[in-house]
Amino acid sequence: MTSLPENYTKRMKEQLGNSYNFFIASYNKTSVKSLRLNRSKILPVNYAHMSRISTGCDNPENVDWCPSGYYYEDSEPGKCVLHEAGAYYIQEASAMLPVTLLDVNDSGQRVLDLCAAPGGKSTQIADLMMGRGILVANEIIPSRASVLSENIERMGVANALVVNEEPAALSGRFPGYFDRILVDAPCSGEGMFRKHPEAALQWSSDNVTMCAARQDMILDCAARMLADGGRIVYSTCTFSPEEDEGAVDRFISRHPGFTVRDMHRIYPHTHKGEGHFAAVLMKTTDAENIGSSSDSTSKPKSGDALSSFKIPRERITLLNDFLVSTLSPGCKYRNLAADNPGRLLAFGDSIYYTPESMPDIKGLKVLRAGLKLGSFKKMRFEPDHALSHALQYEDAICAVNLDADSEDAKKYVTGLTLSCDANIKGWCLVCTEGLGLGWGKASGGVVKNHYPRGLRRQ
Image (tube, rainbow, N blue to C red; front, side, top):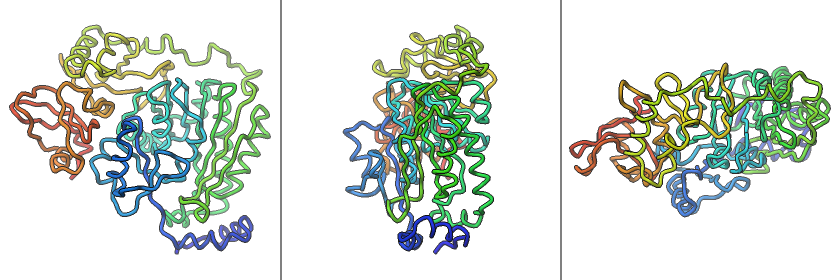
């Protein structure tokens, strides 16, 4: 059983009363395992098939609060090639609840995930947005922001702006800008003691108080960035009332223009998951910016947001030639260079296809500005790994489709070459179960491997 701090168990006895014994007994049980299918990649007709492959169960059990979430027991989905293709995200079941409460859809919303790493909730949000609107995924710690960016890429998210900023810096740039904001705040982590017993060794009452103060600051920044009529979902993976209901009460006292729509607690003895808390905060008035020096001119502009990142015409021609010669006529990215050149953005030799209504990003620490299409090398264009993950088998003129459990699929992610039809030549999309896995270049019946070296399995 996990060794728990005495002050923690004392408080939990007071907090839970007669149900405390059931709660403490849950620490003798094994943590449940779960994953979430990437429905933006998987067609509804394939949900059952993909859920069976990913979980290793014929009839996997659904997570009650997330239709795309499934429990698994004995399988190791992280080792399956489908994981590399972004078919699913291994995510704790309770952590799927906050995004469900965020009320995100594909109507073109502006959404902010303020504390986003490692990316489970950001990619869940993106799944619901279906490529529409803009998702700003922020992480304050640079190393964690890099992991966030990698997961955004793996899951094939094309409409995300990944940034590495302080919440206060963002609140000064985006007053009243977002329709939805998720604040999955750094916390004392009490809800994860069963899954990560080492976290209990770092717990202290002083740390709870410190976390609560930091959560207040982050929520205040989020409040300033929310549009009138929007909603914030505040969540933690702790049981501490000071960080949960107390944080909500303090927030409402500071921000009278907000109301509490709903609050939820998940305990490991009452639900099939680890500990979690989530609250829905609705903004009913625009009181946050009344009397402030900010006005409409200070809000991010989208019309000329990319003017500082213009791309030479000859490079747009190279990109267009690649897209037309490589992607199928029905692929939504085939004509983007010709039809939407205003959404193309250059970072050095790299080129991105930006989200709808892209804000001005000048001065922000940006890790990813939408979908990275590729890079220019001398007088040629080379596609990026991120583009392959935004595609499926039918999107490419030349493609190879591998079974997820095949030896060829395992060989490909280690960097080895593949055999192919001798008639296939040029850039080739390598897929597994129809999902883009990476690029190769075909010639003479062999596909030269272009899977990124840093991602290759040993």
